[in-house]
Length: 151
Image (cartoon, rainbow, N blue to C red; front, side, top):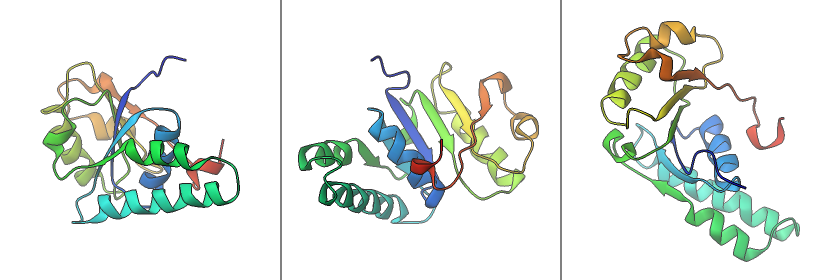
């Protein structure tokens, strides 16, 4: 199977961001984790490792698979570290001004063909993308919690 998005960034590593990162890593993508809170991306990596270790204990995956999944997670410190990503999924606070500022920063850094996605549950995707140079590259990509368990 060809992976559609070999490198994915998740911005915001709370419950939703962690869940999105989990399914992206399980799908075979390299996943870059970024959070504005210092240490949050590392904490998300540790939480996902613990989750996969629980799956090992239940016999659902083996230890080698768990190690491979953890190796796909890459906590980073700055938006600039996401420059090479194919897809960036935002899972931050539900504030239009904050999301717009993030996407403007992302657009200046990522490749022109990278897809930008918002996980908003209540804001207009059109409003979020209104200030972008190329708003057509922004998609609404909403997940339900808990991400790994919801279709």
